[in-house]
Length: 398
Image (cartoon, rainbow, N blue to C red; front, top):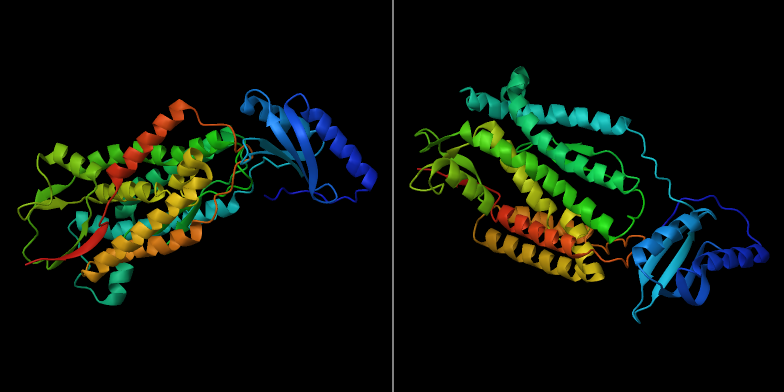
């Protein structure tokens, strides 16, 4: 855990004074059995013992008291049931950073998604690029960027709802987080790799980890479901046109399957029929897929935050098991000739990188409470409902 700080020379006398001051400020909050300097001369000082009373209230007071001496407090549990308070020299700067890069990346991503969406919009309007040469096929959507607005507005609206939900909940906890950084990618199927916010310092406690983690998927889902219903109402159910030899078919999750059944009264695809998606529907489906991906309980994905808040350090074991499952599922699909296996292998390798030890919050002792545990089970249900075993696959017709 690194706290930005200014380095000043400290004498042995200063060290004794600061230890005595911090110890005195802890004595009414914690029974102190021992202390030691972890990082000399006074960069990190450990106090071990037992916090008295409610740990959340005690930690809030520790944070305020230590800050007056230029230190950040961290509270961890010990194997023997005791507690360790670590005073780390330096105070977290809670101010958000600059915004120019966020704006520039968003504008580039907007163009990228409009470009990809224009191709879908051309299809909605009955226009085609299939008979054009390669160069013309790449430039033709530029003439119809306005047709990409429904797709871009839907997809970016869902992503913004997701990321800004994280942002505002994080700011409510005083976390120094960035605004969303959008990642442009002018390639199908979405024109973007999504967006991320950067957490510049440890989160306050497990409650903050949980609340920030669930905020994004819930915020995105609240926007995605109505837009999916709207998009499906603009779509049609029919057999494929006779001149179409291959289609890119979106995968079914339980939620997507259920909404289609409520809208059309049948399980789709079936009996040679399927939904021919309007661009709004496809963008909303992609929003559900993004929700599912973020809820994978690994590393610092949203699902990783939730699993850490619920399970603590044991969440890394769950992360390893999930990665093994993705490797197995992806490999099995590739062996059986399904290219969707590549999606799961890619994410399993990415998650191997991300499944490092989840950084503990400053207060890693205070429990979540019953309401958040129930909400955690609801988030697990959302993951199951949005889980899409085969996200996209090319289907040969005829």
